[in-house]
Length: 515
Image 1 (cartoon, rainbow, N blue to C red):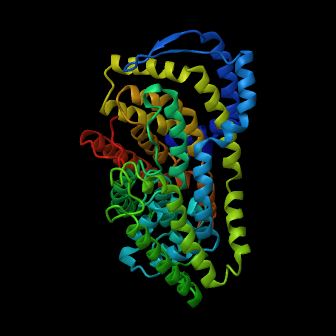
Image 2: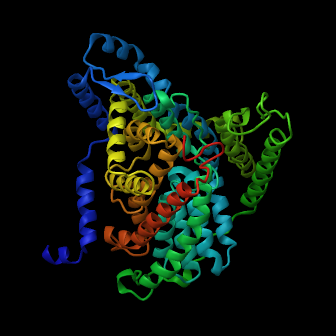
Image 3: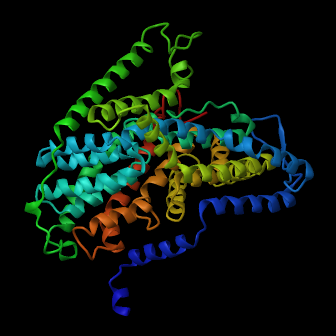
């Protein structure tokens, strides 16, 4: 036993400790129930406190949940709290579209096609680019992209462990980076929308799934070269020739070849591409000309308020649904409307855990909102930040580090944001920063430690893929390969966030850093 312990570095022992502590944390559902119980107790002892909100003439009074009046109201509105939770309706609608791409095999075929056509020099760039946008494929991204990367690297004579680590790191580390937005954006936007109702001064703040899009897009463009650099200049020299990362003797790199798509799959991809292009052209025709269908009928503008922005969830759903159905019909996977319904049903079924989580998160939000404790905490936190002059760049860095640390133990992005958004969104608003900025910085912290937390389900999946090539691969193996990405992306994302703040770069169409 002692010998084994000596094989672990200090950091690896720390991560093993994180795993042990994290495994003792209850299911997010239980966490929300416990938080509601705590709210009942705390609200009883803090009731009646008068809070003066900066920038508002209104006074807020903290209220107790332990009253007959509240319990009558709460028991009556439990179903409404659930169905009105914006994240629920956004995510389930978008899932109807992404499910068509996932369950017809379009995502996997498209990515396989791109990789199989790449030259040896371009493989790293292609894998990183696909992985950065891997969140579009939802949870399946951690299943087929690292497996695809391993084969692609082995086919050109490189260690497949590097491909696995690179793809997994870029999928997990790109939670706030992508060329287009997806269901994650919808989930977070829905929670942010509810968090704005905690403070009177931002109750009317319009929330959109696109409010972090520029931040995501620029982040993706920055992350791709950074990911390639870490792969080729840091991880590859560390792995090549190192016996710690030697593959099993029976595995031969020269025997690995990329699978070719069938002629039917190629035809399906072509048809899906044509349908996607046609859809984009139709949307552009309905949006770009003056006085067109999707423009604001009063101002003639597109951003920030217009039918185009209001229809974003549906437009995004169709962006996935149309090519997914086209591909499915082309390859014979979809033979009737029943197959379309079955694929959509699979997509909704895959969200069952999310739906359960949202039910309890919605009740937590309702209780928290009633107590006015979120406002009290936000005002107190704001005063503390101002007292120590931690606004601006120090605030950005501290906030990102706090979220990075929390993410080591609570890996669900939606449940974590549901826990902290009611406090940090109002607090940022009182400091003059927009809810969009609070959400963007949260996503940064959530991204960088996704890569190394032992509690990540994706890490377990990737470790299973690694053992195909190295049977004795363990937690230390995967973390040692992904740690350079975690550190590199933390530095990169933090610098990018500071740059957005300093130069006041818009976070999305119609969404800035400040209120």
